[in-house]
Length: 262
Ligand SMILES: Nc1ncnc2c1ncn2[C@@H]1O[C@H](COP(=O)(O)OP(=O)(O)OP(=O)(O)O)[C@@H](O)[C@H]1O
Image (cartoon, rainbow, N blue to C red; front, side, top):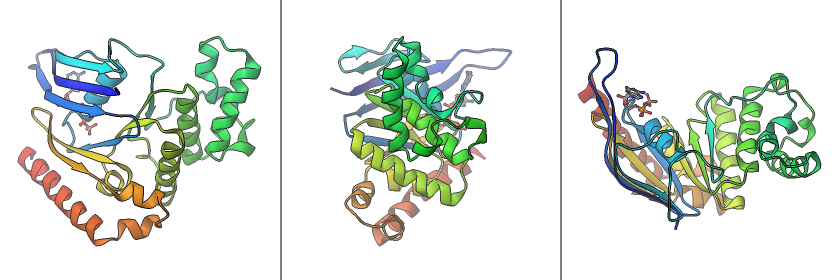
């Protein structure tokens, strides 16, 4: 069970005089419950295309995508997406932003506020429930976006560079928070980042993609998030010899792709 992507290719058709783009070629990937799969790779290697396929925003040109044994043929409540730009509604307060998906499902206010409140507390935003989101910092707004995604109780959380716009310190704190929440809620996660350090720290599995055509070029099983969740300080994990060795190995792969593309 879980997500199963089998032999998936995507070709964007020719448009406006531009030739077709083979964005993904023959992708095989499974994401099980409790997996935290991170996708990393040079710009244009198809990471967002892959996420959009899983979200059901896009259909594959060939191949199949199954979630819990059923074909993915459009967006669904079993998947939630968190983007770098959080697309919150600035005129609503935190709780109504977080409860928005539940409102669309027709749940009564008391019920949706009770559920939303649990995730607001989990994300450390309890005292800001009634604040308008435009008054919050970028990091807090991103936490509102994550709480909103979790409130819909998806099987799979899809995150497209969710921390890319945050400053370094807030980003590290947010990484740790997301790992704790992942651990507590047992969600499967598919996470895109451009940061090698973030990818290594957060994933249980890492796929490194290569461009033209987009494909999975390398796969790694990672121990670091579990070391952190078992009590090791994050900076200590990120400074360990094994972490640094893998970081250099992955950086070499990505630099080689960037140079080949230049
Ligand atoms: N709607 C589209 N029509 C045509 N080509 C597209 C479309 N969307 C993406 N592409 C092309 O498909 C390839 C993969 O794009 P995609 O955005 O999935 O890569 P990415 O790895 O997410 O890139 P980045 O890291 O820059 O966000 C790129 O060559 C891109 O230009």
